[in-house]
Length: 199
Image (tube, rainbow, N blue to C red; front, side, top):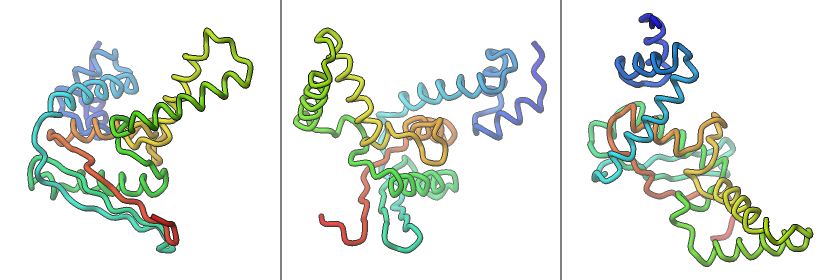
């Protein structure tokens, strides 16, 4: 199949991936742009895994204040170099994440941060619910696991669908920006403030 330069350019503009990566993805996807984007996303996730161990001692503190000034977020996001910390794509990503946190109110960044006590409490609640609904014993564990996944999706930032594009989770968005910028990026910590809300 012949891939024309215009297809490659369009894919590059929408993903930020390199020209050769885009061409290879289009060839693999037999010219289907949507499939090519999925291929690049998967490779972005692979690229992220390769960069995960690298030190992230630079970065920025970003803030988002919602209109009306009653809701705000302060966020620390780290990268490897000061050069990337000043990069517009990196700054835009940080601001998107701060805005997302304001809208979606996650409690944790990743599921690794959820304590075993919280997980066990949730499991017990879901098991009790399933038993009360008369679900068969043999499928209760499956039901509990499914509800636990939904819990992570609601409460853990990286598992949440991105508010500006529900087809992406924050983890996929992070993988894409890592692939585009070429450095390890870590969402370090955040605080979400709602006026009048108790600590």
